[in-house]
Length: 177
Image 1 (tube, rainbow, N blue to C red):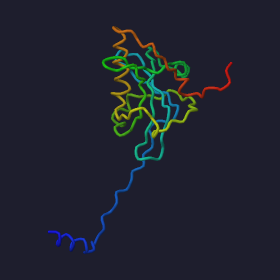
Image 2 (cartoon, helix red, strand yellow):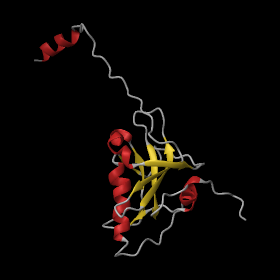
Image 3 (cartoon, rainbow, N blue to C red):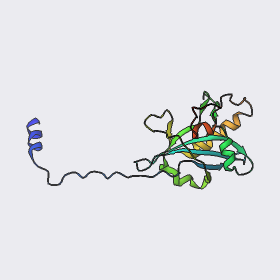
Image 4 (cartoon, rainbow, N blue to C red):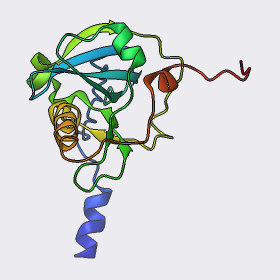
């Protein structure tokens, strides 16, 4: 068996195995995009895009879900004043709902999301040094989590931990006023 294997290695192949071509994807959202979606309670919810990784195999966006839960469409000012949604329902332990979003299944749910504005994001977020998880289901990890958290807050007190969108988008000044 080893002799056959050695003979097989010495014979030159007629056609070399072709390499698979890498597919380069672009993110579906731009950095700073303010996204809205309908919640189960018929209010509007919101999320903001903190980073867009371009020209890679995955085309990731870093998305932070906000605490926006209002009857009218949120404006740019609503996003600038909002806070990040922290999860404390079920077994979550006050973690911010911020995830790297892969657009693999985005075309199936794109009708649920609307871009309303764009705000400047000065921070640059790196996917290599990130502590945030990766998701491919916007409807489950952004919209669904917001629904569950807001529903949970009807029976359980909301979070005491606060993280504003302004903290994630604007650089902190070394000069204190």
